[in-house]
Length: 221
Image (cartoon, rainbow, N blue to C red; front, top):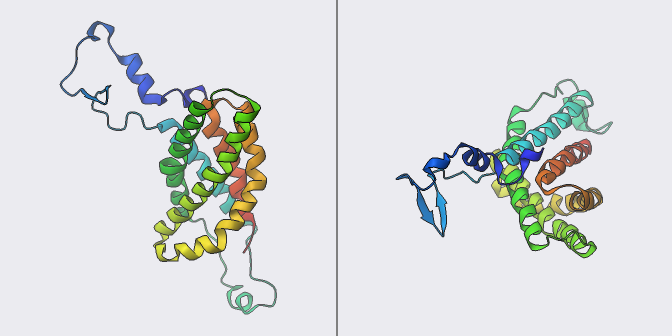
């Protein structure tokens, strides 16, 4: 887990692979942008490892949730017309598109986004004081929490081709999801900022999200 932080894999790889005897030479591909030297890698600072960890754990949470639905499927209420109509044809299967949707969300959005967020908070409040911890927990709930809910709803609706239904989705599910999230994420966030090193915070939060995703999908609607 120590490899999760400190600038990412590509930066450490380039530092180890650089030849000290040619330190003063520059290749034609190097350029200086804003006082910083680059070597032609446009995504060299992308947090690949944090993104991969978040993607893997998000996929794990979705897989557990789908396994639960396969073993204990949610059926329509007893006596309803939907039950009479669909009882004989109800065959839950593993949804690969849903799995890809969640994995890509973890890799492209949740992993990099939370990594940058935690870096930003630690730069602004580096000292582990009670005041700083309280402010970080508060900011996590009023900024990161709603942002994650807004993004994942939009991401899912985009994949499903239902962007026009997004306002209704927000109106119906955003606030209940946020309130349920407060109960789970506030204690987790306190542990995250109070005890977990910066380099492993994305992994810790993503691991906790396995249980959160399983909880949400266990509520049959």
